[in-house]
Image 1 (cartoon, rainbow, N blue to C red):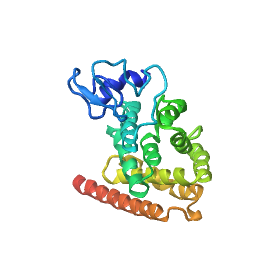
Image 2 (cartoon, one colour):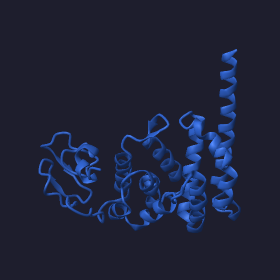
Image 3 (cartoon, one colour):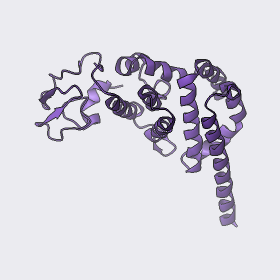
Length: 244
């Protein structure tokens, strides 16, 4: 896998710097870094915010920049992966927006963008920690599937782990499942609805719904299930009707 730092120019649309989301379209123009450091955009070896051969320095980045960075990092990491027929980032965005509606903690929102990176890409835990910090890594690691020979075994190992960690991990997992189920309504993940419905009871049991945490998210998940089931029935009726 090509290094993330080798993609800095194309990812950020800036011919110079990893940090410049407000990119210099002209390689000879200047752009402003989060620290306020100014430099010629064509002089790519003199960035005061970033060591191109090692760790990233995030101490001067504000939270909005960190969240933008997480979005672009996740899009790069998942590459050509698909969510249904759409780019995988569509799912990540749905989870991040859902999480942000319930929690404005930047580390939580960053973890939402990155929640499948350890599980589905070659990005390492060390890379996540070095760029986004230990708290983000802790949340991402908590929601990452444990190894198993099949989905059921992975679920039986992973959900109790999330339950024991609680807090941020539990909230993120609920937002992830809401996004997955709601994707079945718009057709993106409709083929997965039967699976989600089949494991619904186990999901609630192992994730500890009875503990009483995040009732508003559990309620929203219930409503999402019902909407998805109704839409699936409607689509089936339409299909059967057109076949007659």
